[in-house]
Length: 252
Image (cartoon, rainbow, N blue to C red; front, top):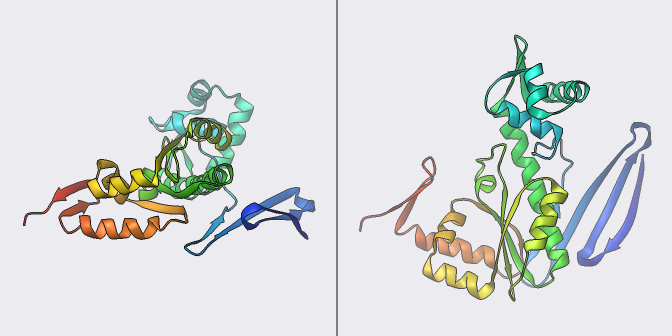
């Protein structure tokens, strides 16, 4: 096993390559530290075990089975994969426990799928956040919110990011490029710090949506603290029912 420091690049990124030549396997561990007087943030990407998105053969299989169990021949038609390629991918999904075979028909194990999807999609969110910060130094904070942050992931979940910056940012091209690169749909909302503070003040519907479940991926402006304070204030007058994903106004 060989361990080597390959490069040192902006924001204190060190790329460590661990090579196992006998297995023809190279793993990359990205460790990024952001430091200033107000923040300390570490980005980390773990090796993904499975990619289950519409762009991948595995994703096509899972998507086809999400509507109900299917035979091998039915999966060939539904996925447009060759019999050989479908057989290879089904064996992998069976080994991982994502797909079950019973009486010559295949079906999805949704509980197992759920446990695999959440870490995988969160890894994509972390790496997308890193890419955005690298491209746009004026970014102050990035939040993950929506179904993935809440743990309600399903096969067609997209990744919702809120990017807060010093000045207005156009992130349409970033959203498209990152979605293609990572093989999953991203929905990136951008706002300035001034707009974010206005959202907190007026308690907009977006704020309520964020407070249902979020993770701070990057922060150098104290956004983490602001959200905690805002949630405490809102919960004085509102109750969030997690099972129903519903905010209820409290009677005084």
